[in-house]
Image (cartoon, rainbow, N blue to C red):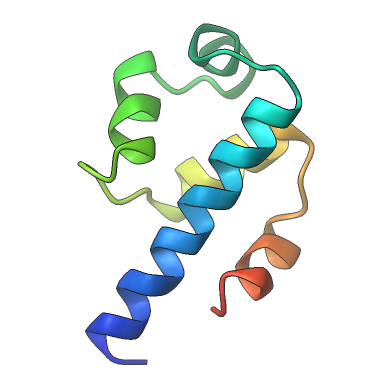
Length: 77
């Protein structure tokens, strides 16, 4: 996977996380409580100012009740 493909996959992953959060009606504040990540970290990930670590992805997926492996496949990883 080259850098452009990686960036595109990351964009898809983040877009899916945002869509799932919004569909479930979960605010950044609530996601902070559920995931243990800071509100700033969540905001930076969603705005693509920061690349999420695998641990952050795992925490977000657990908080949103989403299967990380399925989400990664959807993102083309």
